Length: 587
Image 1 (cartoon, rainbow, N blue to C red):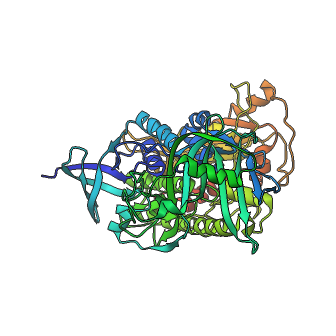
Image 2 (tube, one colour):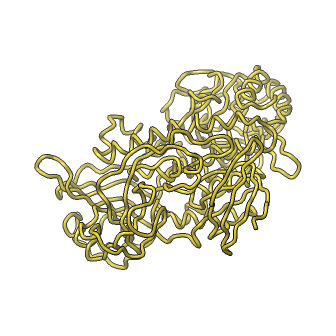
Image 3 (cartoon, rainbow, N blue to C red):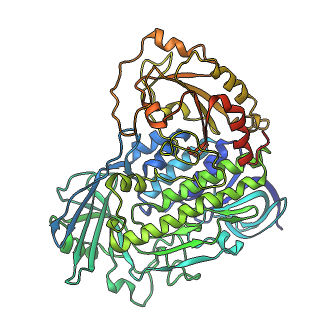
């Protein structure tokens, strides 16, 4: 007999997306149950690339250091066509971006997220499968099959499907998943290569036929370890022949044969590639002779491109591969899914706390589905024609691949712009900056250091003159924003207000370099001690350069690191009311 047990949010799927959603919700004090049908993490380097934007999100969670200690940096890509070296691609970002590109096997990402989540008091319920669910105006009723083989009925406020390309939540919700499949299947393998190529560079070696089409391909991505790479290449024909399949890593679908839902995406159940088959491709295409060894695993990978018609309905939502799948070009999939999770989590937390109406949750689809459409379209183009398919300048290309250009200026939560149009506006990413000084630390801080750890919204008051009384008035008006700041009993509070004070340095034009100034004197720093909120000096004008304030200016930073509002400080009350109205929050 089924038993009923209540929770705020039930999350199905404990991959990086489900773990991120659970972690963000738990940080906001939301009760979460996270179920996963697999008995343990799969030890396959499925998703490898970690984008700078994802590292920024993990920094705010206090997780970035652990990720950095486990990952390896990606400096660029070496490209060879018919054995001839092409111009090297360097993964260079502007100096104000705090993190570079990294590689980390998915199982390590999951391990670190799982440990972080356990520290928040939430564990994965493994070998637990969603059988069915229904929703009504007050919640969701879900039927689970537990690890013990029994059934359990639970009641949740909301259900989030992070259960991959073959999502049971997506199917139960009746969402369409339109798209198609690529005809080529690929071999994947985790091996050591004894070549002398520079560390930290991926390798793309291809052969072009007389008509210019690519008829052979080898892609090698560095992994943590000595000379260790994740290799991918078109699958050997004999691996796809009819016949009994080996017990492969069926992460997203049936253990063998064609997937029951017709979606050919992910690690397949075909015969597993042998080291000799991987070595044969390396012998044909690698820029240096190399002997492969110590193969940890191999598989066949199939690729589709699809996206749902909507990211949720009522009290049920989908995120990550459950909502969008596409080629792994540029390592966009896992990172896009993690941003889905963070976008949805803080909104669910506000609604569950009673601080916002359910209408806020409609902004999840409005903001994230256009991002999913863009990523699917771009990765399909790049898979077919390379990154040159998009004729952007190199800087724009790198920022887009790093997911630093994702914004919601046209979304329903974007408030009235203020200041230069090319300055960060509501909906844009809130830039990080260096060179902040405070009364106690004898070192400069980054804005991420200031905002790290505490969940919820942050408000930054920029003051050209720290003695300006407008700061006290703005702080008093922000103190009244209890809807954004105060949690229910036992829940984490959300709103934090800090001030950044200038030192007579005017905002510079974008791209203007700034000198690294010496630490300010105690007398300079004392100017921020009297502020009504924690204060920091903009010692080199870096904040002013990146945010381009116009006199005393306020900035609301959303929990997902996007700007919620930008306003002159003398209009703090009105700006706060506008932002709360956009969020369906009672001001």
